[in-house]
Length: 512
Image (cartoon, rainbow, N blue to C red; front, side):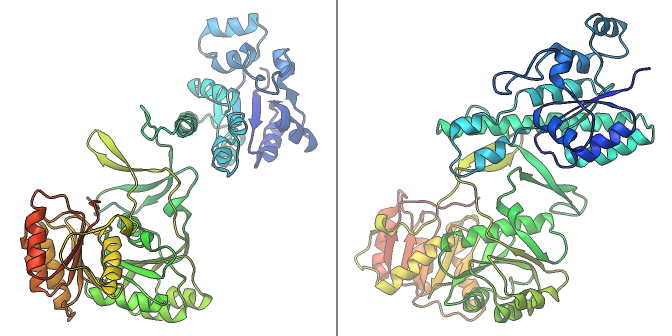
């Protein structure tokens, strides 16, 4: 019986020489291409060029080298079908029993700043996916490897003489998942080149980062999947604490979302169940934290906290006095890491988890996904219009700007009360806006905040004047809201009656 044959053609050469040497030691014949063949020969491993097998030289600057019946026939022939075996023999084609291929780095090249379209297009692999798919289709007879991490277990199975069909089936599954993700990345790049935000078809390339202990509730299995470039939350460096949970990840997104509009300022958001229980700016991280905590210290128990500025020792001491699930910041002092590290269950994450440019926001519904552009939440004051007789003061305008940026991260219906760059009361997720207004006042007073002279921010228009009346009863002096209700005149009239300054932004900020 002739020795088995392996074809190795890899862009990422990690571990390939050790794998090839292991195969050679087992008596395998090796075939390879270009740079891979060169690397194997330099390691002292005997290998044949693909061009010797095909009797056809590589051409078109390497665009064509493995697209040949001598390769694909050798991969696709079923060993249990005599006609296939006979066809190979008549064509003088030897079967190929193992393929190890990984693909040109298209995603990495496309993500690199300054990469030119012609350079990116040259990184679209053609022969690699073709060989992988041929081998994976015939997994009953051919072992296919797309991930260098699998070299070890494949070699161990071969050394043990283990004809592991389940392993080959798993490896074939990994191939089709990888080539699907690869093709989707290419399609998305073409869509971006055409400036098409919503192409006719979207395939989202994701890979599993980790299994989670459970989902939102025990009994629900869960995993964390990330985009291949591993940006966003996947780019955060965990500096301490136990593994992240499903709900931790959701709350981290909520906390980062709450502080996003305050980049360039020092801000802190304390988030519970994806909505802020407190949000504030300050002269330093400690002041921002104390102001955010003062909004609702009870709800802060078991929260996730996001900072826009590094956390120092003093801030870490303050945070560590409270039970906190996670803390995320651009950086931590060595002392802060030591202090926070004393809390074994506190997850400490470093970084800012930026969104990729032009990334869409997806929401799952039964049978499909909703896709939208990401919300932008800047102050937009140049588009604001004062609708009331009384103009807001400079101090009120500053607080209104803060309130407008803050309310966009609160679950709808959302109302915030704010003063001096901090929320003092938050009404989140209510079915009516007047209830959200009532709750914001109630929460503020519950912890002893004086609501007189505060400002109110609303994520959408007031449908009736009752929300303004709720604000007036609390002593609110100014309101910011989008406007656009059929009863705007009635609402503005109510504000004038109570001498409240009211500003329309012309922009809604629902967060469902």
